Length: 284
Image (cartoon, rainbow, N blue to C red):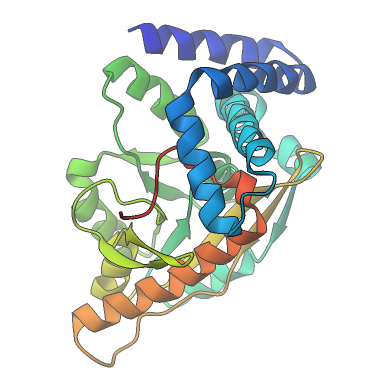
């Protein structure tokens, strides 16, 4: 309940303060969190060392990761009340939205694939508000009130959130109806992932997007909402990646995974301080 009260208080002042002031408060609190969370700080620094292949400037960049997470929370908590089409027109440049139309023309649905980059929550809301309804899988929080608070923010902008225990059935049903499913593909929360090369080291990568694609014929559409220096965003969607027909199902899944892993790697290398990963990512 304490965590819920913290988030609820954060939601309150994120909505009553002007956005720029809310950002400043969030960055100050993020700096404090950086020093009070040595375990998270070490994990972020270790991840940055792998991405950058150097120790130079890692401390400053790690602090920027924490600050970007603070901004992410501000935007997330403002989604229900303050994120609307006017905000999108002013603050978000959208590139490649036609790739969704190309995918849906084939009547196989589409799998919007992203990572813990920039602001993925806001990205889902933006696509939904642009007229492309999506369903998204959300890992439940341990505390029910926190889980409900987060899902209220997502659903306020029309997204349908499904729990992990019904995810497989609902995703397949949605794709068969030519709908869109949004999935994160840079962290495996279970034990069913695949160990692949990721930024030069071995990591457990989720199989879900590739499995759904192979089973239903739906293409994977990479999509990333990346923050600019002025806290405006660029939404970039990539050309659909269609599942092949050659080889076994296992081979086809693995080929797709390797393909979208390269795309995620590229985004992380370009924007290392926007990869909001607060755990050691790679296998020992």
